[in-house]
Length: 101
Ligand code: FES
Image 1 (cartoon, rainbow, N blue to C red):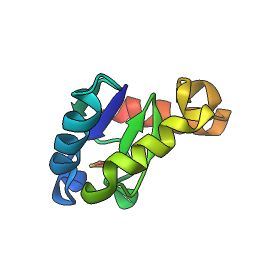
Image 2 (image 1 turned 120 degrees about the vertical axis):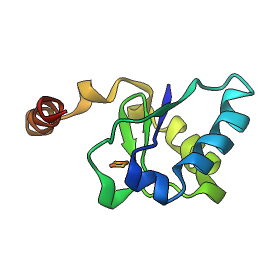
Image 3 (image 1 turned 45 degrees about the horizontal axis):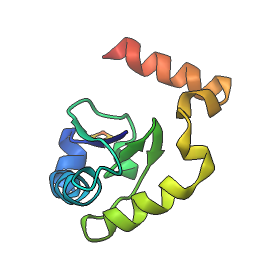
Image 4 (image 1 turned 90 degrees about the vertical axis):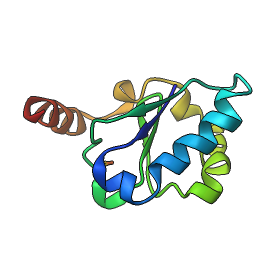
Protein backbone atom coordinates (compact mmCIF):
# COMPACT_ATOMS: atom_id res chain seq x y z
CA UNK A 1 0.00 0.00 0.00
CA UNK A 2 1.35 3.35 -1.06
CA UNK A 3 -0.23 6.55 0.24
CA UNK A 4 0.79 9.91 -1.17
CA UNK A 5 0.43 12.88 1.15
CA UNK A 6 -1.71 15.44 -0.64
CA UNK A 7 -1.80 17.85 2.28
CA UNK A 8 -1.34 21.49 1.36
CA UNK A 9 2.45 21.66 1.83
CA UNK A 10 3.25 18.43 -0.03
CA UNK A 11 0.77 19.47 -2.74
CA UNK A 12 2.67 22.72 -3.31
CA UNK A 13 5.79 20.61 -3.83
CA UNK A 14 4.36 18.25 -6.41
CA UNK A 15 2.54 15.47 -4.60
CA UNK A 16 -0.32 15.44 -7.14
CA UNK A 17 2.21 14.77 -9.88
CA UNK A 18 3.90 12.15 -7.68
CA UNK A 19 0.55 10.45 -7.18
CA UNK A 20 -0.02 10.48 -10.94
CA UNK A 21 3.27 8.80 -11.83
CA UNK A 22 3.03 6.24 -9.01
CA UNK A 23 -0.56 5.38 -9.90
CA UNK A 24 0.33 5.02 -13.58
CA UNK A 25 3.49 2.95 -13.06
CA UNK A 26 2.92 0.94 -9.89
CA UNK A 27 -0.86 0.98 -9.59
CA UNK A 28 -1.42 0.29 -13.28
CA UNK A 29 0.90 -2.71 -13.26
CA UNK A 30 -0.63 -4.14 -10.10
CA UNK A 31 2.63 -3.84 -8.16
CA UNK A 32 0.97 -1.72 -5.50
CA UNK A 33 -2.23 -0.05 -4.45
CA UNK A 34 -1.71 3.72 -4.67
CA UNK A 35 -3.95 6.15 -2.81
CA UNK A 36 -4.00 9.85 -2.06
CA UNK A 37 -4.19 11.00 1.52
CA UNK A 38 -5.64 14.40 2.23
CA UNK A 39 -4.46 14.19 5.84
CA UNK A 40 -1.05 15.73 6.47
CA UNK A 41 1.51 13.14 7.56
CA UNK A 42 2.99 15.61 10.05
CA UNK A 43 6.41 15.85 8.37
CA UNK A 44 5.80 18.78 6.04
CA UNK A 45 9.36 20.12 6.19
CA UNK A 46 10.67 16.82 4.78
CA UNK A 47 8.10 16.45 2.00
CA UNK A 48 6.77 15.64 -0.38
CA UNK A 49 6.05 12.50 1.60
CA UNK A 50 4.85 9.05 0.65
CA UNK A 51 3.95 6.22 3.01
CA UNK A 52 4.86 2.70 1.99
CA UNK A 53 3.06 0.30 4.34
CA UNK A 54 3.12 3.15 6.89
CA UNK A 55 6.88 3.65 6.51
CA UNK A 56 7.55 7.31 5.72
CA UNK A 57 9.52 8.10 2.56
CA UNK A 58 10.50 11.76 2.45
CA UNK A 59 11.85 14.08 -0.21
CA UNK A 60 10.15 12.24 -3.03
CA UNK A 61 10.56 13.98 -6.39
CA UNK A 62 8.04 13.65 -9.24
CA UNK A 63 10.71 12.79 -11.82
CA UNK A 64 12.25 10.01 -9.70
CA UNK A 65 9.29 8.93 -7.56
CA UNK A 66 8.92 5.52 -9.18
CA UNK A 67 12.61 4.66 -8.69
CA UNK A 68 12.61 6.02 -5.12
CA UNK A 69 9.54 4.00 -4.14
CA UNK A 70 10.67 0.85 -5.96
CA UNK A 71 13.98 1.00 -4.07
CA UNK A 72 12.09 1.29 -0.78
CA UNK A 73 9.87 -1.65 -1.79
CA UNK A 74 13.04 -3.77 -1.93
CA UNK A 75 13.90 -2.74 1.64
CA UNK A 76 12.79 -5.57 3.92
CA UNK A 77 11.81 -3.17 6.70
CA UNK A 78 9.31 -1.43 4.41
CA UNK A 79 7.51 -4.64 3.56
CA UNK A 80 5.93 -4.80 6.99
CA UNK A 81 3.62 -2.36 8.68
CA UNK A 82 5.89 0.46 9.78
CA UNK A 83 4.11 1.00 13.07
CA UNK A 84 5.37 -2.34 14.31
CA UNK A 85 8.95 -1.32 13.66
CA UNK A 86 8.90 2.03 15.44
CA UNK A 87 10.15 2.68 18.92
CA UNK A 88 7.80 3.71 21.72
CA UNK A 89 8.74 7.43 21.48
CA UNK A 90 7.81 7.51 17.79
CA UNK A 91 4.49 5.81 18.58
CA UNK A 92 3.79 8.43 21.27
CA UNK A 93 4.39 11.16 18.67
CA UNK A 94 2.01 9.45 16.26
CA UNK A 95 -0.70 9.16 18.93
CA UNK A 96 -0.25 12.83 19.85
CA UNK A 97 -0.60 13.78 16.19
CA UNK A 98 -3.78 11.70 15.86
CA UNK A 99 -5.25 13.39 18.96
CA UNK A 100 -4.73 16.79 17.31
CA UNK A 101 -6.54 15.80 14.12
S1 FES B 1 1.40 18.27 3.95
FE1 FES B 1 2.45 16.41 3.60
S2 FES B 1 3.43 16.02 5.49
FE2 FES B 1 2.29 17.83 5.85
